[in-house]
Image 1 (cartoon, rainbow, N blue to C red):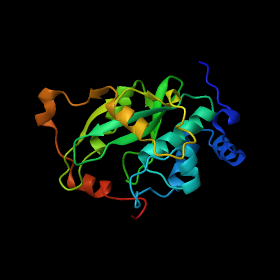
Image 2: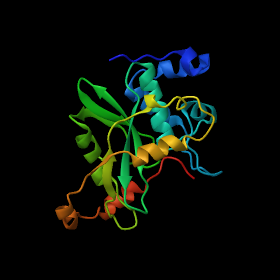
Image 3: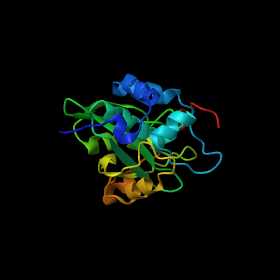
Image 4: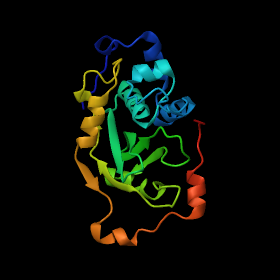
Length: 210
């Protein structure tokens, strides 16, 4: 696997390189993301590049996933993200993927007590995606909303994903329109049980205040 990244290629500053080099493990990357206040998009919808996230010091799930992917890329891992798609009115979630000794894990930027980091214990992407199923529900009634997951989405096909000053709407659209795989078998939808009250209470806990 030929994975290379150069400061010159992406015009990263010394400060940016220094921050990213310190994030040498998935756990360190997750710890760093946790220090960033959640991006509530108070001035309008954003899809910031890692450079902008480092500058603004805030991120939501997509932006956190890109920053995590860049940190992994700096340390010679593929920059892969995964889309978890839901039923409306719930919102999709995007995570960064990593692999250790043949097993998948995930790095996640979220404001909730669930949908978070995943240790590298999953044999394949479906196993990893399914680990989020029982955590993904509407707090008002406990309805489980996760319906599908994408293939690992390689960010290296885009030239601007690391340092762009523009919104990365094109990447969001391509990810959303990429191939997804259904989670719940059609014949078993009627057997899905809502999350219990105590789960909904736990799921309502937030890390950052809006």
